[in-house]
Length: 167
Image (cartoon, rainbow, N blue to C red; front, side, top):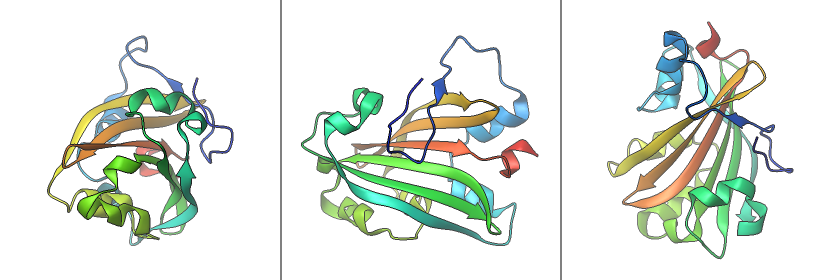
């Protein structure tokens, strides 16, 4: 289990290799390599986010997320609810080491209500190290370490019941 006591995300169970194969339709969503924002836009008229929290954290405040990111004096945290046609579809938590926030990536602290995916997938210099699959009861989650110009950030997404992933 993982969790951060102040996070909008509930504790998640990361499955790694001990879980039976995922149903194809679920796997197709969870292993999406492109922008989840763009994928959601194919299932509704309007995607938008509601910003829940933005702030700097110390490594001690990250919990188990710290093992997936380099040591840094502080980390930018952004938590959001992504909505499709005003229905909550996803909870998102992004943790970014201070060193990633240099050069053009400084804009990550000023995204406001712009979905992170719109910036990441338009930057032209984004790569993904991995996707971990997780669960929270009947809900599916994924965690990815992404790199912008080689600099890491950690993105965790929990798919809510109204999400098209479950249709």
